[in-house]
Amino acid sequence: MTRSDTSAGSPAPADAPALAVRGLRKSYGGREVVRGLSFTAARGRLTAVLGPNGAGKTTTVECCEGLRRPDAGTIEVLGVDRRTPSADAALRERVGVMLQDGGLPMAPRAGAVLAHLARLHARPLDPAALLGRLGLADATRTAVRRLSGGQRQRLALAGAIIGRPQLVFLDEPSAGLDPQARLAVWDLLRELRAGGTSLVLTTHLMHEAEELADHVVIIDAGQVIAQGTPAELTGGSRVRIDPLGTLLPEPLAEALRARLAGEGRHDLAVREVHGLVEVAAADGEVDAGMLAAVSTAVTEAGAPGARVTVHRRTLEDTFLDLTGRELRGMEDVA
Ligand SMILES: Nc1ncnc2c1ncn2[C@@H]1O[C@H](COP(=O)(O)OP(=O)(O)OP(=O)(O)O)[C@@H](O)[C@H]1O
Image (cartoon, rainbow, N blue to C red; front, side, top):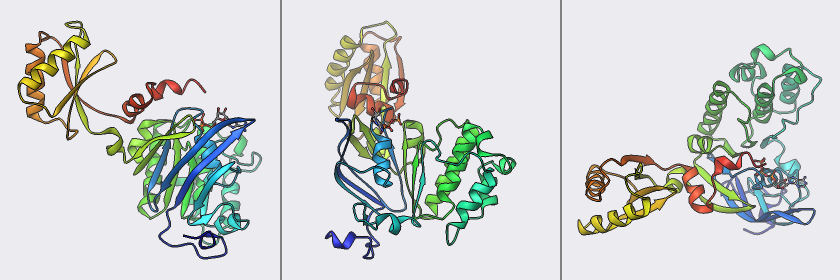
């Protein structure tokens, strides 16, 4: 694809990805916070950019939205090169943006804000129906400044999608929402995707990425450290053994390795993880035979009182494996 193919003046190829970020770099005051980041978001899919506080998620999406100028790298949004002068005009109707702080005017009433945004678009959704859908029907006549943080979040989401955009950027869309409101937002996002909308959201909630995303891009310290479907990234299930004081994890792991190898189970890998022992199969999933073999080996290794469970790996486990740090713990470090 040549540069001119992707200029805002030429029609962008219909099969271009919703978003293609290549080699993105951004510094603040000499400190580089986005360090050569590349990923692609497919059309009609939900892509989650996941990482701890300060990883560079907001900076990245703000560059994609055209709110920040990258120091280096290229960004194509719906096939349009962000660097072309007419990119903003070409993308205005096609891209919806929900900012982390909402970006809403404070004085007008919620209903008036959404009605105003609807008038800016050729084929808007019905504002009243959208407010109802997001549990904001009772807040229609309330000034934005008097809305709760969670209500403002949902109003910002409504504003991002009112124009039926082809691609929506959402920066931490469920931050600060109670569980009920979060489920309403998730339902709406799933429905948008089912209708063919491309969605790119940032989150530091692994659960949100696991629930919603077709593709997850994990970033840390301004770089992509892993990406794939949630299933690819978590890699199935494991047998997890908590020795519960019967044996130390390392000797238990050693004994299990020897016994499982003796049984011909060369497909099983044993490792010690933070005081526990995990056994993984080459194909990534635990079956009944494997569970029985491991349980027998644990008993024979002298730890019949150990707790043996099947653990489905989470994105948090993947993050921990890759960085040695807990993603959840990082939320407090901002
Ligand atoms: N305008 C700015 N000026 C200086 N530093 C900034 C600015 N915006 C962000 N940073 C710094 O850049 C780093 C990345 O911030 P960014 O907001 O992109 O991360 P994030 O992954 O979105 O984090 P969070 O989950 O907390 O929103 C942080 O260390 C932050 O303090």
